[in-house]
Length: 98
Image (tube, rainbow, N blue to C red; front, side, top):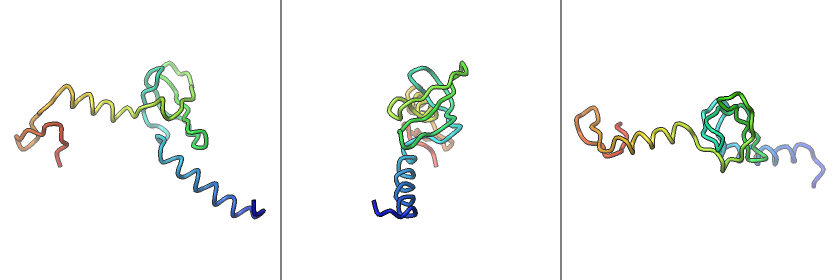
């Protein structure tokens, strides 16, 4: 547009940084339509990640196709253990203890 390289690089960096905020980081475990896997590459401009599945295949998924593994497991735990007592003996009703 303006012909100055630095201007364009700054603009692109801002877009890149914003896109990365909505994607899991490398080495994070995720749940995909094809099973559980680990993120091995992040492609923020495409809004995708490359995941290494448990069977060693590497597949690219859009951010809308994946879920963070830790969040899903925490939700499952809360569902299976409603009203569990915290360390003070009080019922936490799904709330995390502080």
